[in-house]
Length: 329
Image (cartoon, rainbow, N blue to C red):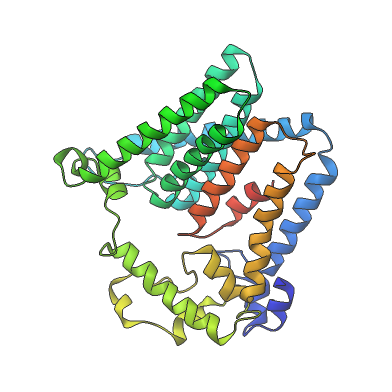
């Protein structure tokens, strides 16, 4: 679908090559497809996959230490979102999000006491760094992913009655904490913590929310004009220019992304492109949960929660090469 959208789009050259900043054109998708095929062709055993994920998890620990160094360089009282060498807090946030669930997977698959402690410390460090990126969509996605895992435990983990009981208590606790923070969003405690204040002050009046909604309206206008195969990858700039809403006068000029992965694909490759993107998740979940799946219940719950968290994150931002590498793996 993306190949056809590139050929019949408004600027095939840009759709194929993208630009140096994004590197998100058809040539990148073809490389990612090759990368995916090489992974499944070469990693033919669980042992190799474990080595792969253990290595990338180790790199994520280095990234957390890098975030700690960056945090130490922030002036006292200053408000700053961590980005490390990623250059963008959103990119760092989704990188940490995926690795938190990978660490949880390692935790669930070992009975060694010390290995579990190490995994727990890694998750704690990753959460600290993720929190300090201030990326609301990722933090809320993480919360939704955890909630999904708890609900699945209640309805699927019949062989673990104690786990079902604990999951129910945790859902009540999470709901209580979330409600308390939301109701006290104007309190001094919340306002004195920039990240927490940013997280609890989400409304239609919020500038970022308003800008996204205006952007999405423009994307829908573009979809109506070219609904089947869209405008071609990396051509949202055409839609942005044609349907620009002057109410965006006070916004960062998001001229190449809608900040919503569903609308990004609708503009890039039409409704067929959106269907293709959603089928990646649908088939992943199908093979994860089918009757003869080669996954245990813990793996099914953890990776389902990861997909939910990742998809929610993408509903308010967009994919990039770093997140694609992890997503396809």
